[in-house]
Length: 434
Image 1 (cartoon, rainbow, N blue to C red):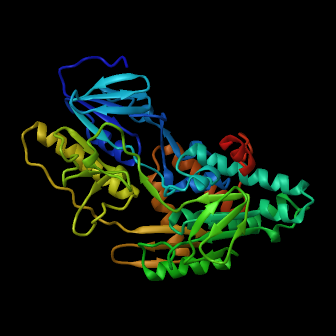
Image 2 (image 1 turned 90 degrees about the horizontal axis):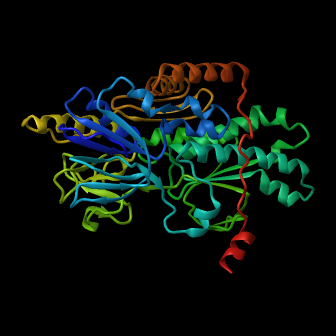
Image 3 (image 1 turned 60 degrees about the vertical axis):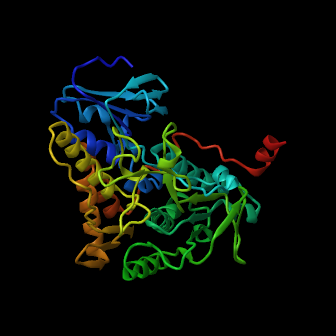
């Protein structure tokens, strides 16, 4: 890896997401050598991925180069690589570009999409956890309309412009709202010779409420906003299968759709090599104590989505969201510094700062610890919080200008098919199986 040897302790951080970045920031200007490893050379602001997927923002406005963030930090090294395995006995990490020894290892590998073992859905449905995946969705959505223009068979044309979003959490709700706004104000202008009124947006939620974890008022208000925008909301309906053409559910309702976006679950991106007793198999989350230390290990820590810190309030670990990850990363950095100095460590206590989701123009729901509100004011609060949270002044300016332009003109300028997406179909899958 061409990392110089040093007498200072070496801290290896795997993952440049919210948790890993927070930990790396906290270890700046310390007598340590910090090595950050990630399979991408940028940090992604995941809460705005849906806007990339729907043409509201370009990907470079929600991504920030990891090296640029630490340009002026001494003893910091970034390596573009994918971690293959951990050798805990030898204090070594095996990666796609070689091995590296560590004194302290921090696992902040984040999460991946959880298809709950359904291989058909995993193969045919779209996921949205990374920038490339969001760009794939953007291309597929636009390609569907281009293809629908040429399709003479009514049933096939309707399937091309029928969108199914599985999962009624923030990602699903925000994506459904963004697609509905495209249907209302943008697509009729782009495709005047196509009857956009036939476009269907279906949001399927397995439970009886949207935005589970937020207040009942926010849940009901978000559903009300979506229905006003023309989204068909299906609750208490579970998706069982998708073969690339038909969505099968546990009810009487089935959907003919060429595009299914899976936002129904996530699981930790655990790394091979740890003791199997440390990993919760179903959720792929690593068991840690109140100091984020992986159980059974003295110098390995896990933070963020991949970590499962069981408490009385959070029996299955903290919510897999940005705030717990950031808070864990910041505290872990302080605890590492304290431990090296022989000082007392602080156990992690999550400070819930609330949750929010936007459904569309002037429509959002916000749950703060003391206040809960919906509508226009909530929408402005949502915008301010997300702008403030973006990394880099340039990104803040670009996103703000895009939002102002989109609001005034009711338009989304980045409706570009830059990298066409090749849709999978069940026939090619059957041939592969044979």
